[in-house]
Length: 212
Image 1 (tube, rainbow, N blue to C red):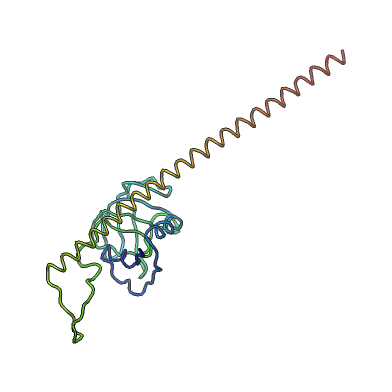
Image 2 (tube, helix red, strand yellow; image 1 turned 120 degrees about the horizontal axis):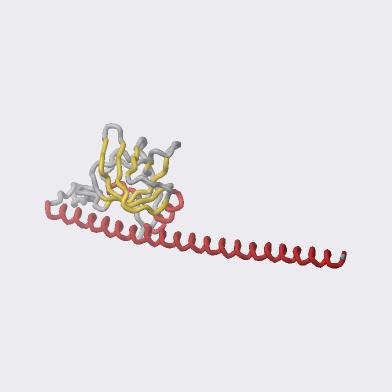
């Protein structure tokens, strides 16, 4: 099933995103692109919001990609294609560092999302009667719609965590295999060098005996 990136925009209650157009991918495709393009990917919590300067601080619980040692990190938003956060929640963030690597930017087209996108997003689709007038929804229908989207968001959140943890484990395995290959190659080279030195030593001894 195709997932529009604007669905992810809604997860955070984002404003000012009408001028940004994102391509349409499946969630798996979106994750794959995010893993390739993002400098840093983590699971954490939004702990501080500065809506005046559009800066946001996160506490990092689990790092999936990137060389980053601190427990907190700050993101900034400056264009219509950036995430604008308005509520403290658990998040999965795909970010890119600025030039001095002190801040990150989170694209609205990335698979970044929160655990629960909150009531009212995305907007309930309009239905029209035979005269073309909008049929108003009652509170039960609105609540059911919001609950359905919260459940979808939670499912997506859990699925992403599983995929990212699998990616992290695979990278660790690749790293360990590379280290093993490196040690094996180093050992072979060391044995060859020692064999050459030993052979040279024997040749020197033989020459000395011949001279005598």
